[in-house]
Image 1: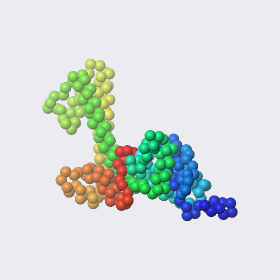
Image 2: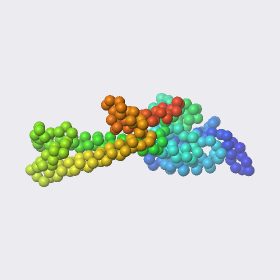
Image 3: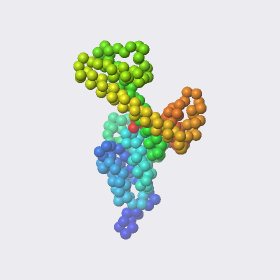
Image 4: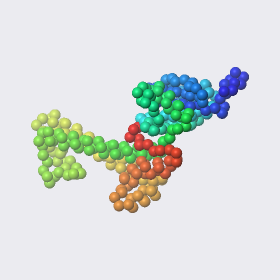
Length: 272
């Protein structure tokens, strides 16, 4: 540290920041090369952190790290934009002592991350671009809607089975055709309350089918543009791979792997 005219100057020095990210606050640990400056709780925003670093360590190089999870990568993007060299790491890749495991809390986690950032022994995740993440969200949202549709169908079948209602075999459809849905709509229970329960489930199913159809159209349109057009054409030429399957592969695996630096690993957002 150099003091010029009573002003601090950390030019040429590295400051290491470990962040334990929370919804209402962040636990922050700041280390210099030789000692721990401070571990404290701060507001959950990048501006507060960067402002503090500039006030306390003007001119320094700031190196931060946090674990991938619920909050995704927007914090990383914002830190990078504000001049902080940030890493996002997989929680399971952070070396942890037995003592840290037994006494785990936000303060311990922040200190551990800052220490390993200083030691340089963390393997960063590949952080996709915002564009790639939003494309992936579209594909994942469709998959989530399909899961909801399956759950809704099971609720309808459960309701019918509970009251011993059967549908003629010649009408039953594995794929719930329009004819099958019409047969369900024509069913009547002994009371209006039973009819309303079935109607509510059928209305939800119709809405989910419309949503899935709209998302499917959007994904197909996305597949015809850059950067997906050529890779999709190549993938669908393989027997058994549809456009939807190709887009799942490209948004989840292929493009991420193509751009991943040699010293990083990929991370499934199932943990986030």
